[in-house]
Image (cartoon, rainbow, N blue to C red; front, side, top):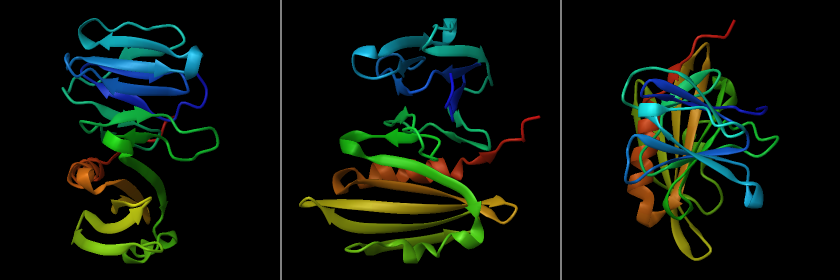
Length: 203
């Protein structure tokens, strides 16, 4: 079960997957999460029902968890909510990002950090070649920029959300999506960013 950088907690259970892994919600049964291990012909899946959750060998270990009726993605340093319409996927080997959130038509949300605040340039400077500023928002707990660009003939949007993390550090939540899914992805990224909760260090 090496390389696991994130787990899923809520509804009275904690789901610790075998790497590489994915989590998907069941569209018809809200209390069921599909856990996916592996890829291709080696893929194994398990449907975990929170009313009778059981460990499935080489797919997912089920442990006691918080009773709140909301799913949170837990890393070693922080946790965030699992937004609707997005699946969780483990990063490839060597990738420092703890998890990816994939939505419709390759919509994507992912965290970076926490990083030393002085290593993060002002968000307005994160616009890459061909990107233009759509909007900028700032409040005491969150700063965000919304950018527009074209890729392979399609209109896309990208956003960066800066979350203070204490100790002179910050998390950056980045999101990108086709313009048709920009509102959904922006709202999900904002919800993730505003839900960041630091976790106590492990002994």
